[in-house]
Image 1 (tube, each protein chain N blue to C red):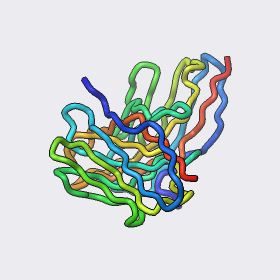
Image 2: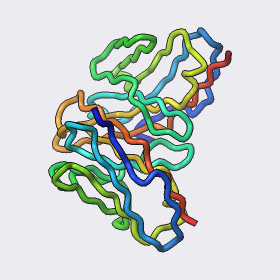
Image 3: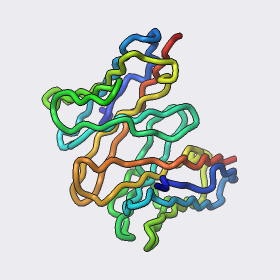
Length: 112
Length: 115
């Protein structure tokens, strides 16, 4: 079992719709979770992170965390073609060292 | 505010050669982590440096080694290159080792091709 699992996609949504990206993790010691966006051939760009159960909103993005279910999600409202990219979920542990484990990433395609 | 920088941008080597990649962390950051990202995969953790010491290491052979300098910059060295070492090598910087807010910021990466 992979430590962080994501569906590789592609996930196709029409422009203006809500894109829902999901991630599960296996290590209950994980303390926080990061969502990165990666355009083809570029490096990952941090979108947001979450460490408490519930929702965290930042502009068009909402991260959701359910530690009991070991489940993290990212919602993108009013999806734009420029949102088309691969979205990486990462689980983070910090305690004397940092351990960051990435999923394979979900490819999102926003159709104009 | 200077972000994470990496050099070189691209590199082509042949099997058996050695390579050194360089990284300067974001201004104010003191921790550097290195990742390998193969095509179609997520970044895989290689190792992390803090206070000039390797603090944590992923599942990579000893051919992969590193160093951190007093100015917090870092190098990744790979010896006896294999075709499978072809990947995007990413450097990420952060501040310290503690805290759940300790997000990592990535540099632009070095694309290594081994022929």
